[in-house]
Amino acid sequence: MDTIDVKRLLRQPEGQFLERKGCYEYIKGQWRLRKARGVARDVAETLSAFANADGGTLLLGVDDDGNVSGVDFAKDRLRVIQDAPKNLIKQPLRTNINEIPFQGKRLFLFTVNWMPGVYQLTDGRYLLRIGDSNMPFPADQIELLKSGKRKAIFESRIEPTASWDYIFKELIVDFGKRIGIDKSPEEILFEYRLIDYDNGNPKFKLASLLLFGKDPLRWHPRCGIDFVKYEGTERKLGRELNIIKRARIELPLIKLIEEAYKTISAQIKERQYLHDLFFVEKFEYPTFAWQEAIVNAVAHRDYSIQGLSIEVCMFDDRIEIRSPGLPPEPVTLERILKRERVHASRNPLIVRVLTDLGYMRETGEGIPRMFEEMEKNGLYPPKIEIVADSLFSVILKNQPMYSIDDMEWLKQFSDLDLNPNQKRMLIFAKAHGNSFTSRNYQKLCDLGIYEAGKEIKEMIRLSVITLNKKGGRIYRLQPKQKWGIVEEPTEYVPLKQIIYKKGFLKNSDIQEALAVSRFKATKLAKTFVEIGLLRREGKGKGSRYYAVKG
Image (cartoon, rainbow, N blue to C red; front, side, top):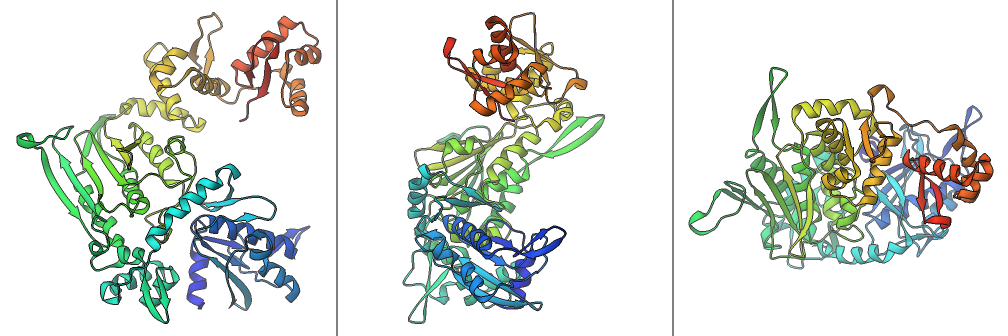
């Protein structure tokens, strides 16, 4: 590896495909070489997490602050580190290891490719690379992860009739310049695992032909994007056909996204709002939200489905993006709607290229941020669903959920990390005498009584609202000066030790600890539940109370 590549790895932020590790630790005022076994454990954790995701690179000998400190272990200790992929990971992990002299120091580069299998550490843990972290992965979902990986092989299939005549070498060179790689087109494709060799002859993978091919449609008849703009809010046919613009965008994927951005952005309107005697101009859709939906559609679509294109349909009130294929396992629609930070790639080779180009950011972050951007702009959250059993659909509405004045009013709660449901309820309360009921919450936010109750208790804990003590289960907005985390009542303090030891409280524990009657203990427990310190499970004498985290 040459100096340019090392400098690029030092500049590149850590994330989905890159991590840097130092071999020194700061103890008692001085830097000391870490134990080789500890470094080996870190290496094994990161490499197994990379292999379980999309592959990646570990640069050993660089501290968290970017300082190049080097790898200074004796030969036998260095062997412990280099053998970590086969000794600390069940089913030894195939790893490329390169020693690199740099700035008078010795660095080591560990590289693992995307692998079809799932790798477990010898201590029993499974890790998955999500963003810049190695996240624990539940053992009961390993089969789902394996299933998803088995379906991710399509983009890697070799196209036997392909040759350099079908590749835009200029696009590869341009790609290299944009990401700081000064190499030949062949070297770049090989580095990104987009090309294999058979007796010295290049063999091109489908992903390379979709990304850089002169005619991607030769290899996949529907790998582009169909854009249609309709007049009105619904599709009409025949004499009432209401299509006012149609574009079929068919380009190599590396150019497809940018061309889609240009085509669609030209149709997105700017709207003016009168606020504080000034006109404010805003796009009808947040740029990040609709562009993220486009990128996800290109990166994660199921390319084994060859009869369907990505479809983008624009109406007066919404934009719909449909992509062929279900979410790759273990990602599910339910987990997406919960905004969980979860990731799996159906097309890891394509994702790697799009990520290095900056189209994609940390894995697992795009859709949650899409929700945040819509909410920040006062719009309804994205509607995400599965259509016709095989299409992943994202719908963005341009109708504001809040007025400009409501948005300004909500800014006073910005430090409290309230979710969209809680903010909607505050707007409702402001318009209804500064109060609401649990039934109002359930109906407005389309939640069950348990989910609504949980979110209401969190607002009580933050002292944003208080329960009307006169009865009727009416919740009222608190004055701003009373906001903040609710202080623990004096009676609650001795109960915390009991919860720490037993894991829960019973009525009899409260009676004994506080020397109160059963009736008084029941009343106190109810109060602690209402202010969000405890949650109750069970009924009657079987009731148990558990601490609420957060």
